[in-house]
Image (tube, rainbow, N blue to C red; front, side, top):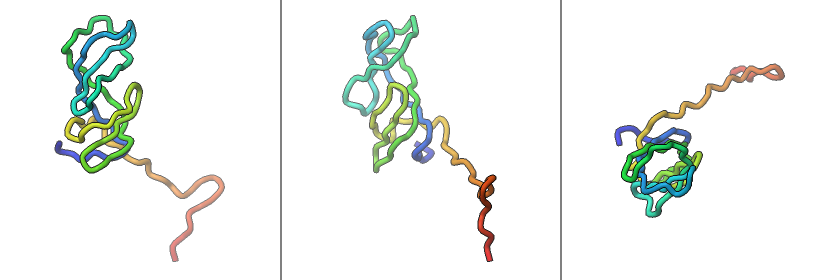
Length: 106
C-alpha cells in the first residue's frame, strides 16, 4: 500500500461473490475478514466468483487494521486489503462569521 490511510478516507475493498442470498442481497467473501458478509445488490446478472468493489468510509485505524463503515459495511480488515479511492481533505475553517470575528494577534 503506497499511501497512508486516515480516518475519513474512502477506501475500496475487492470482494468475491459467493452466491445470491435473496432477490436483493448477495453473499460476499472479503479478504482478511473471517466471515461471509451479505450486502444489498439488485444487479440482475451476477455470478459466483465475480469480483466486486465495496466502498465506504474509514471509521477507525489500528496498527494493522482499518474499520470501514458505510452502506452494508461495518467491518475491520487488514490495512493491506484496502485501496485508497478518495483521500479526506478537512474543510478550511474561517474564523469570520456573521456573529463573531477571529481574535487578532498582538
